[in-house]
Image (tube, rainbow, N blue to C red):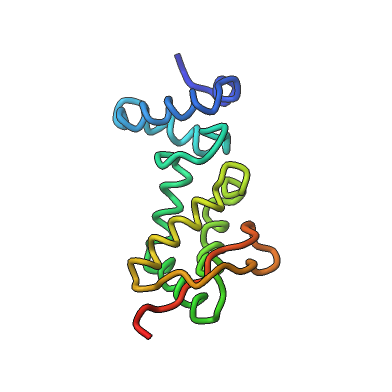
Length: 147
């Protein structure tokens, strides 16, 4: 049976997540097309918090840990802004409305940024409001441990 957007809409978020995971295991046997349909649909894959296997979470990891993401996070920190303020525009440009606070997407992005900043030798220095127009409302501030 062919997967359609109508069939996806009738599924629960958890059913779509299971379908996505099964398709990932069958990339060369039609899985790739199913993954592309699910991801292009913008439909959620969980009814609560974002799963670590959620394609949006995985893409945020790629963006944040990319050379461009690292540079943006450090530049924001050096400007005394939350590191997320530097990288969030990259996330929004890539994910569009798939990045939002309703499924803890902004919290997940902040957690990934925290892992990155710790790995780069920074420590938590508090929290601050994000710049006007940001999707996330507040985020962590970081300072170098080398000072």
